[in-house]
Image (cartoon, rainbow, N blue to C red; front, side):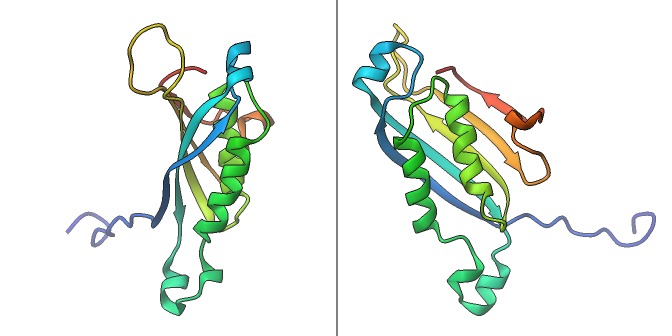
Length: 149
């Protein structure tokens, strides 16, 4: 037996994921990207305690992923931004607006970026949680940059 008593099993959070949500949008640094636009996609993985909803079979006790998909799509297809990092943060903010969401991981895909060389995809992945304000509010939140806008 470990010192101090029996080991407490580590609990893993419940997750709800939306993957491959797509929209044609005009995000990007270059004028041609703003003129023509291209298809972007987003993956959102939310940590949510789904136990209350599971016990009661009540949609009001969990994240309604159909509504979330509509809200994320509005941002993805909405006001253009220069950087994928900015877009990812806006999408994370949408998810964290629901108080049941403890943590979110957002990945924004830009598979049609003009890099001048063959490639499959450019992504930016960020992780945000309820305990840290968004970076725009002075946070030093984590960002896993796998590419730039």
